[in-house]
Every structure is written in structure tokens, then in C-alpha cells.
Amino acid sequence: MQNISPEIQSRAAKIKLLIMDVDGVLTDGHIYIRDNGEEIKPFHTLDGHGLKMLQASGVQTAIITGRDAPSVGIRVKQIGINHYYKGIHDKRAAYADLREKAGVEEHECAFIGDDVVDLPVMVRCGLPVAVPEAHWFALQHAAYVTRKTAGKGAVRELCDLIMQAQGTLEPALQEYVK
Image 1: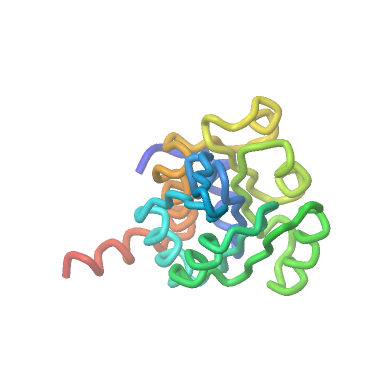
Image 2: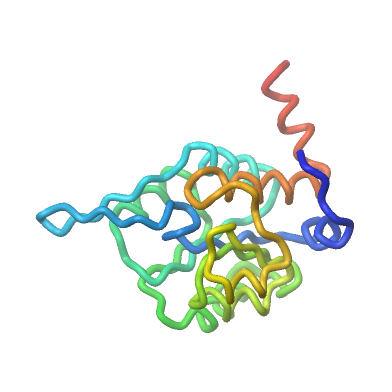
């Protein structure tokens, strides 16, 4: 894993809840719409397995998204995301409700986003993260910008970073080579 600054490692070591946007974070930002109105979204398997590993290490996961696409609900069930907020226009209110339900403080939350609609959570959480192609104003408010791009391993990179900071990554990886 890449070298991470001591400040980011310190923040990541405290994370008990990883919150994600969907479009432009878990996906590449493209929305494919079939003639019948059905949305198709491309998800990356690296992100999915990283989230499962993070959950197994004791960190809760959540999604707060402005859209309400059935494909996201299916992916949430496949991965076992702990908390799912869909069709949300006020991410600040959803974030407050989520923290209460998850039993975590703001400094124990990480959020990964890509646009200005994510800022109400990013500016309040302990570890605000953006993908490299995020809107310039969102990038200004990120403590960490992933090297991997949206929908192509950015979330996995963040999962690995949190697990590394918490000392759970190496033991989890070693399970695969026993």
C-alpha cells in the first residue's frame, strides 16, 4: 500500500463508519438508461470485496445517495451494506440520522464523494475523501484524494487505507494465502 501521511493514518485509525455516495464513486458516474427507463450502473468487484473485508474488520458501511435506482438496492444487498439512504436531497439530515442509528461520532466517520452535493457530509466527518475526477470545489474539501478513479477501485483503496491504519489489513490479506 502507498505511503499515507501520519495525519490521514490517524484519522483513518478512528473510523467506525464508512459512508459513500454512489454515482461517481461506486460507479464511474455514467448512468445508462434503457428504453424502458431501467437504469444500469457498472460496479467494480474490487470495491465490493473491499467493503466486505472492511465490514468483517468491524467497520460499518453506509450509502447516502440522491437517486433511487433499483440496481443500487440490489448491490447493497449483495455486499451487505449496513445502512442505505436513497433518494436523499438533504444529505446533512440523513447523515445526522445515520450517525445516531450507527452510534458513532463525526470524527469516527469517513465519507467518499465526488460532487458539491456531498459537501454537507464531507465538511463534518472525520475523514473526507474524494475521487480524483471529483468537482474542483469538492476536491478542495477532501483530506484525501484516492489514486484510483470512481467505479474502478477508489472505494477499495479507501477500505484498504482504513484497514491498514487500524492494523486489520495485513491479517485479513494473510487469510487468503494460508
